[in-house]
Image 1 (cartoon, rainbow, N blue to C red):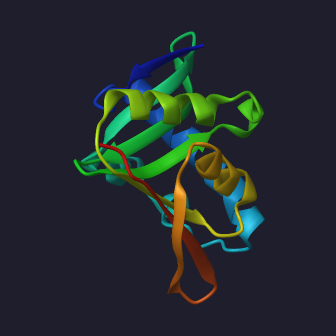
Image 2: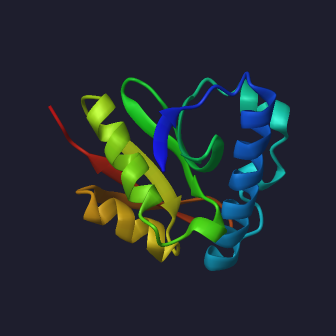
Length: 148
């Protein structure tokens, strides 16, 4: 398994990332009891148009997990692992790669009831900074990692 930068201008890569994201966010929606996660209804074109950088864990040349971020300052926009690849350390590996490639503070948010994601960020040294409810029924935990 390799971690590489992904180029969403490549149609094959973009479609694979879109599918992985939909599958991963479907699991999160079930975990947190909220079907309105924006990425679940995001079109491929909308996803590609976001001003994000992308890292992917690839099996052969196919992304099976990815992390997208903006910045500086670094804000993790999404970290998704295809459910068929859960519990293999891919989220940890992608997050570690991001932390090696960037400097300064990092922020991230996830569904407050998404215990696997919450545990991942806490293991990586992030501190929970709060819980917000951007829309009724959606509780989101926010995290920060302070670095020099």
